[in-house]
Length: 128
Image (tube, rainbow, N blue to C red):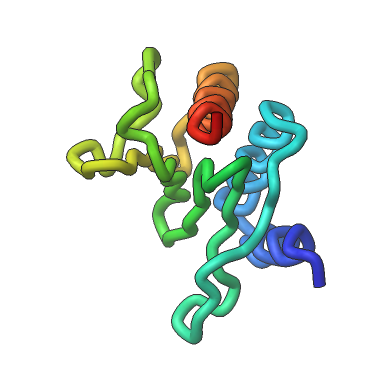
């Protein structure tokens, strides 16, 4: 089964705002980077559906699902410029940064796509 199908299943399993939010995030990531690779990583007994992960020459971000939030963790977020202040979690982590989205939060779609593009650029520059 392709990994995109696993992400489809994960979104479908969330019959509330979290499914809608994860689906929106997925759409925005694909709009920002049409070449993004979608996969599910870290499948284990305690998390049988795994973690949706988006990559382009390395991990861009992951989408973890919790009861009260969707957590988008950017693998190298600490080195990304975040002019609109989307990062609101893991702010003291050495490398990562995260965006926690709760039920009533409104994600700045333009700023989020800019952040995805910056993460792609960072990953592709590393290989040059």
